[in-house]
Image (tube, rainbow, N blue to C red; front, side, top):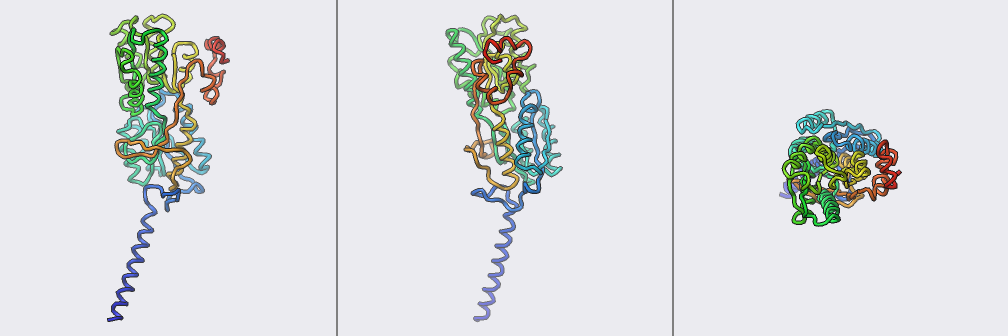
Amino acid sequence: MVRRERRMVIVAGALLAVVLAAAGCGGGNGGGGAGGGGKVAGRESTANGFKIGLLLPESKTTRYETFDRPLITDRLGQLCSKCQVLFQNADQDAAKQQSQAEAMLTQGAKVLILDPVDAKAAGAIVSSAKAQNVPVVSYDRLAQGPVTYFVSFDNRKIGQLQGQSLLDQLSKGGDPKRGDIVMINGSPTDPNAADFKAGAHSVLDGKVNIGKEFDTPDWSPDQAQQEMEQAITALGRNRIIGVYAANDGTAGGAIAAMKGSGFPSPLPPVTGQDAELAGVQRIVSGDQFMTVFKDIKPEAETAAAMAVAAATGNVFSGQPTVQRNNGTQDVTSVLLTPVAVTKNNIKDTVIKAGFYTPQQICTGSFAQPCAAAGIS
């Protein structure tokens, strides 16, 4: 009887050892990072290098190819010198971005940095990557699906900055309800555009008359120009006292429409975003009132750090994080602070940050207004 009990104990002990060993092996392929900054077994190594996919949404907005791509690539090179960056631009085509992502996964990308064309459609990219144990860092726009990390700016705050800047400028001329404003929002498929719009409305509603409002497919400047032309026809040139434009591209389209319709100088104040060179130059010349400067360098460098941490099984740290829900789950996020830019602080913002030099801004016909603004 005693021998039988001993045999049972030995067998039970052996089974327990097998179970524990299996549990230890199974943990190596988990999708999340270990708590406390520990590594997850079986993840990639910066010593050996690995492939990183970088997916940007479009090239109509000049920032992506001029700033985001080189800044992200350079920082990835610093963090993982042996890593290979696979890059694609989707040209504002969600289906094309899906194909690009699938190709990167087939090529062996171990992490994706994704700025989605369409946040909802991009959920398929994120889910496909998750199924292959490939983490996704959502960049600038928050994609749906099981995203690992997200970095962007406080997008509602951006809309509030734009709305408040416009309201303050209109108030300098008298009653801000003395005429109508036109709102030219961003793309209806971009979740950031919804945040900009909500932020602007939180400031403007009840304090101005919104004569016409549009959502602009693909953030197209040409479409924004057509929308502004429709507003001018509907409201009349003399009735429009300001324009909320969600970014510098749509601002350029609205300004072109007003100039083409014979608006006298100075034009009604027009907002913007992204501090594109053309937008900053329009601010210098007086055609555009303001833009929003989002210092892309810390955003790009944070995305690179998140990607390397996720791929190597480490927990991203070093910056304060918040949780943002993407419709699927709460995502650990870093939200950076935007800055309103007018003619009065160009030197202290985009120039001081090294975004542009005075020589880049103050070329040709912009030299004289630059000198008058004390920029040259």
